[in-house]
Structure formats: C-alpha cells, structure tokens
Image 1: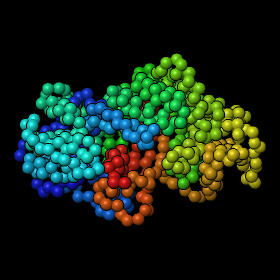
Image 2: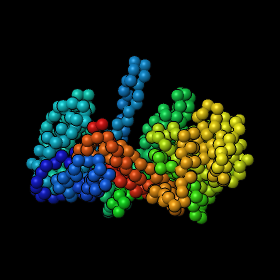
Image 3: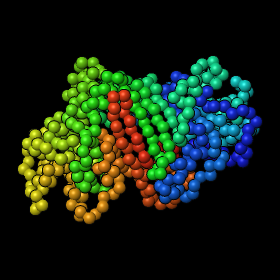
Image 4: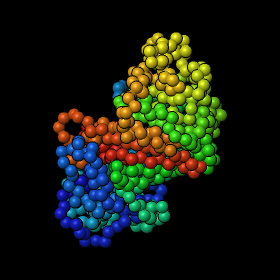
Length: 518
C-alpha cells in the first residue's frame, strides 16, 4: 500500500527490470505476487461499495506496471503486558517485499527516503531514526522506531527490497544473486495470471497452525486445561492434514474472485472426498426461512450429514495421540451447544441432507440452525435438556414452539421445518418464513438455494468498505455503512478442498483494510 504515495511522473528506468520472484527464497513460508500493482489496487477501487464509502478514486498511474512479490519467512513472538499479572502474545511476521518499479534510481531513492520513511514512522507510532549507507552494491536504509522495531530497505537500480528483518532481506539478496534457490524456479509460479496469486507452504501451515491454536484456545474457554488441549491438538491436526494452500485472484463481473486450493494428505483427502460429497437434488425450500437481517448464513448440502460429521471427527482423531483423540470426540458435541443441541450425531441423523446455519452478530453469539426434520422423536432426544424439559406452545398457525426457562435458547417446528438456537433469531426465521409467495427473495439467498456445492456461505461486512477507503483515498463523512457482500462455495474432492469466493473487495481488500488508521 505504501506505493500509493508515489508521486512520480516518469515511467522509464535506467536499468534492466528484475523479476521480483528471483529475489524470493524458495523456502518462503508464505508467498504473494502481482504482476501489476496498479491493476490490482484498481480492481478494489472499482467496487461500487468503494464508491459509496470513499470521497474519490485513487490516482494509480504511479504504480501501474509495478511488479511486486512478498514473502513471510517466519514469525516472531512478542509478549505484551496488559496488567502486572497478565500479558498477551502477539505474533509478528518476518517479511520481505520486492518491487520492480521501472523508475529511475534517483526517483526510487527519493521515494524510499521520504514516502517509505513516513509510512514506517506512522506504523511504528512516532518518528523513526534513519541511517543510510552504501551496502550490497546499492543504497541501504535502516529505520529505528521509538519502540525499538527496525525496518530495512535496499535499493538496486529500479528495484526495492524492503522488510522488517535484516536476515530475511539478506536471504532475499542471496536468492537474487543465485547463491540460494528462488521461487522463480518453481514451475507453478511461472505464469501467475490474474490479479494476484500466492501460496502457503507445509511449513507455513505448521507455524500458522500453532498461532491459530493459541488464538482459538483463548476464545474457546477460560479453563486453563481446555485452552492447553485446544492449543496443542488443533495445530497437530492441521499439520498432519493439510500439505499446502494455493491462492489465485481475478476480476469478474460481480467483483473479485478468490480461489483457494487446500491440498490434503492422500488418505485424508480420500475419506473427506467420499464422506463430504454434495447431495444430489434440488433445494428443500429452507432458504425462505433465512431472514434478511443475517450477518452471514451457510447452507450445507451433504449426502449424509451424520456420516460427514463422523468422518471429520475420525480424521481429526487419527492425526493426534490416543488420549487426545478420545478427548476430541468427547468435546465434539460442545460445538453444537450454541444452537441448543446436546447430541450432534443424533441430531444430524434426524434431519435431511441440507442444513442452514445463520448468524446475526459479528461475535457469533446469536446463531440458529434451519433444517428439514426426518425423525421428530430422534430430534427431540438430541436437543438440550432445557428444551426437552418444557412443554411446547402451539400457535394459531400450527407452529410448535419451545423456549427454555432461562430464555437463552428456543426451538420451533413449522410443518417439517426445524429452527433452533438464539430465541430472537428463531423468531426472525419464523417471520421470514411467512413471506408472501409473490415476494422475491434477495439474490444472495436464492444463490444459497441453487448452489451445487457441499457448502455455500453468504454474508456482509459493514466495516471493510470504510477501512479500504481510509487507506486508498479518504472516507466520506458520516457513519452510514457500505456493506460489502461475499459468497463462498466449498467443494471437496479426494485431493483437495476447493473454496471459491466472490466479493466486493476480495482477500486483497481485507489485507488493505488492515492498514486503516482506525
């Protein structure tokens, strides 16, 4: 994003251009590349949601044609004190970015010293001290922030190598000089195409798994034993299941399409591909019970939901030790507790092939499940005790409604349709089901009904538009949100999990939003 500050008129340079991939070590944990930074940012700025949130479109002429590659080479753990007794762990990526600007060297030097330096000072929370020297055959910059953080840049002709770790920068230079292998030698990146592409290696997945395990453990429970279990087992399962992730993004008529290919271990892929195959047949009519007030909704369309759930658990169990595997199975039902369900397998065996989960808040505390009932008696045995212990009320429309005494969970059966979970969400779903037959459903809800994928998610984000506008231009005054929409389809085969998402800003928009001042 720092290249948006380039106010340079010239577009030619005095040295042959360098392929940025040749300066990225082949053992990078995470790698992202774009052949045209201006085209990439332009696709984000073309979104109608951007026009709603931003005062003006950015002038991208200065960055048109710039090739850029970014690599994460590792993660640094930083402990920050919250109180005298408590602290939190932050994980800071060690990265290097390589940009071929195709500008004259004096222009690049001016940009790095002034614009890049300003960006670093703002990122580090105050004016950073700058040291400039001649090193590695070019101009070498070191910034020292007031908090002790450092940033480094090397300018070689029209090329900029920039990072927050000196060893990562030096390895990038070694790759460029042919002293170690580079990403450019890998055939899958010979022609990136599209707007942007990248990958996460097996080692990268292992490190991200450790980070996500700690993060999820802190959210899962306040109990230290539970936190320890989640932080240990989740990374182990991911490391032994996923072998790599590839990403490719392109502009489409309805926004930006991101394709993620998550490669799985052979045996795991065979099991998941068979057990999680999409059910055949059309929609079951559940979509009409989806309220328009949702934050997101996911429709699962599986041949046998119980078998799919069981296969996922058994796959995870096989990736860890025997004791942890038994504990994993014991804790598995707790994932259904927010919906008012005690026995997951019994519940999944009592409903049809399609289920819809809907969320009404960003924190995920207000959720419901919508399903078609196959076995009412089995269903009633599977739900929470606080629902089983109360008598249902019958409405004048023939709806059976259960509410727990504490008022924290509810269940409704409308004909053969079940809605269970947050009481307010259940009522909203009942109201949505009463839509007149001549009222057309929103396009996103209709997409849920017609998708042939094993899972499809629709949703909206009310904050990302203003954050992207803040970085690329300036936010319009006022607090009216420009809700960015997305649709994600997931298909599973015996080799990989394929996730295709179409949204207003794409994954790259979410990355840009991280740089917003707020």
